[in-house]
Each structure stands twice: as C-alpha cells, then as structure tokens.
Image (cartoon, rainbow, N blue to C red; front, side, top):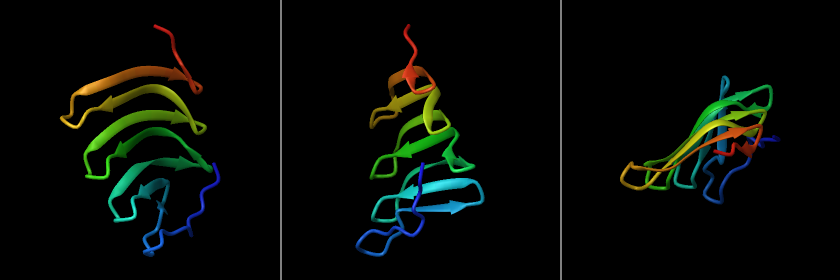
Amino acid sequence: MEIDLTKTYANGQPVCALTDTTLTFFYKTGQMKAQGPFVEGMMERTWEFYRYDGTLWQTGNLKNDLKHGRWTRYDRNGIVEYDEEFHEGKQVKK
C-alpha cells in the first residue's frame, strides 16, 4: 500500500503519521481514526479502528495489506455486532 505521509487535510492536520513501525491515521480534527503496525510498506498484524467520537469501532488482523485472521466490529455501546475470520482477504465460511 502506497502511503503518502505528506498528505494533509485542508486545515493542515496530517492524514497519517508513521512512528517507527506504527502507522496512525487521523480524522481532520486530529482524533485517531486507525492505528497498527506498518512493516516493509504493508499493514500487518492487529489494527484498531475508531469512530469519529473516539470510541472503538473494530479490531482486525492484516497480512500483506489483506484481512487475515479475526475481525470484530462493535456497536456504539461496545457490544460485538460482527465477528468473522478471514484468510488472505477472503471471509472464511462457517
């Protein structure tokens, strides 16, 4: 995945930032949107995704920028509303 670390919103807020091997995406307010490992130019391992209000929206595992492993999505009350497994970007049938 090609990441442009110089990209900013109209207000000057960076769209993303890379610190060591952790890539963080931001909303235009500066609130964190998503965060996880970025290794050799790819999103890897466990990532967390947040709603605009800062609450956890979903967690998931990636391998070579593809969904790989468990993905869990939460409703606004923190209750699991989606819990699925993926293998190399494809949902595993139950």
